[in-house]
Picture 1: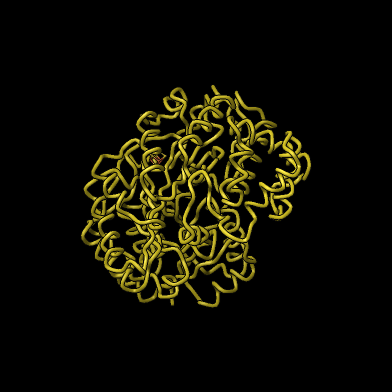
Picture 2: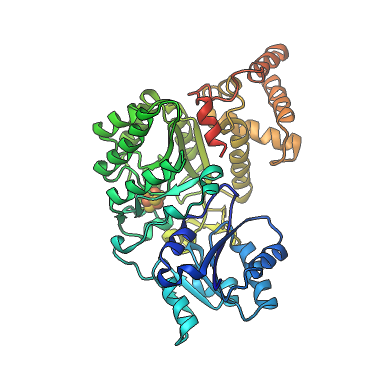
Length: 491
Ligand code: SF4
C-alpha cells in the first residue's frame, strides 16, 4: 500500500465523503490507495502509529475546521518520526490563507479547492517524477461528468453503523459573507440519473439514513422532486422498512409542486435544515444574504403545520449590525413559527470568507484559534457574547434535546429569548457549568428556576414530572418529533 487517505472525523458515525471521492478518482493509483479514518480526541501517538503500520509513502489528510488543531499535531509527529513519508493536505481549512498556517509549514504539499483530480496527479508526480516543484497546488475543477461517484466505497460496516453522506450537487449560488460556499459563485449538479442509480445501490445494500450535503437542496425543483420521488417510492414499496433523508433548504423557495411532494412523506422520514441566520433586513444586506423574510416565515410555518418533516432552523448571533435586541426579535419570531429545533450558532470567521471586510467598521473581534468564534463586536461586548454562547449551550440541553417537552413553553412564556436568557444567566450563576450537567441535576435546576420566578413549588414539580414520566417525553411539545425520527436524530 502506497497512499493512505486519512482524516479525523468529528464522530465515528460521520463517514468521510471527501476521502471516498478521492479514492474513487485515484485512477491507476486506486489499487495502492487505502482509507484510514480517525475520530477527534484520539491520542496523537496512536494515530501516527496506526498510519505508519500501513507503511505509506504518501499520506493525504482532509483538513477541516474541527480537526485542524489535532491534525497539526499528527502531521508534526509524523514528520518527526517518519520524515520520508510525504504529507499532502487538502480540504476547506487549508484552501484559503494557506501560507499562514502552521500545518501547511509542516506538510510537503497542499491542494486547495477541489482535490478529486489534482490529488491523484500530485501523487503520481511524487511517485513517478518529476517531483512537483510547487508546494501549493490549486485544485482543478473538472466537468461534473468526469468525476467518479464514490458511493460503492461505503463499506457494509459504514452502511450499517454510520451516517451515509451523499451529494446531488456541489456549491451554492448565494453569497452570504459568513459562509465558505459564498465563494462558489454557482452550484454544479451531478447527473441526477447516475446519482439516483447510486442511491438505488446504497439502498439495496441496506442504507436507510441518507444525509444530503447539498447546500441548497431546493434550488432546482425538478431535481428536488426526482430525489424526493426516489424516497417516496422506497417508502411505498416497503412501508415497514422506512428510509430517512436529511436536506438543507433555502427557506424562501418552496413552490407548490415541492410542497405537494413534501406533504406525501410519512412521519419520521424527512429532516430539513433551514438557514434563516437573521431576520434583520439591515444585517442581511450587510452580509449579502438575499432572503425574502415574509416568504421564508410563511414557508417555515407551512412546513411546521403541513408536513411531518423534522425542522431544524439556524440562526447566527454576532453578525455585523445585529444587536442583542434585534437578534432577540428574530429568535422570538422564529420560535413562534414552531420549528422543532432552533440551532443557535455564534458567528465564526471561516478562512477565506468575505465577512472580514466588516472587521473595522463593526469592530469584529474573533478568536484566532479554530473555530474562530466571534468574541465581541461594536454592538455586543465580550461579556454579553459569552452570555449568548451559554444561552446557545443551554438551549441545546433544554430545548433542542426535546427533554423538557411540557416545561419548555412555560419556561419561555411570551418572550422566549428574554425568558431563556434570564434562565441561562441564573443557571450559570448557580452551577458555574455549561457542560456536563447531568439530566437529573438540570431538571432540578429548571424546577428551582420556575419556583424562583413565582411558580408554586408543587406545580413546578408536577410540570417537571410530566416530562420525566416513564413514557412520551422525548418529543418537543411545540411540534413533537416521532420516536423513530428521534432515534435517527441521535445518530
Ligand atoms: S449560507 Fe447557505 S445560502 Fe448562503 S452562501 Fe452559504 S450555503 Fe449558500
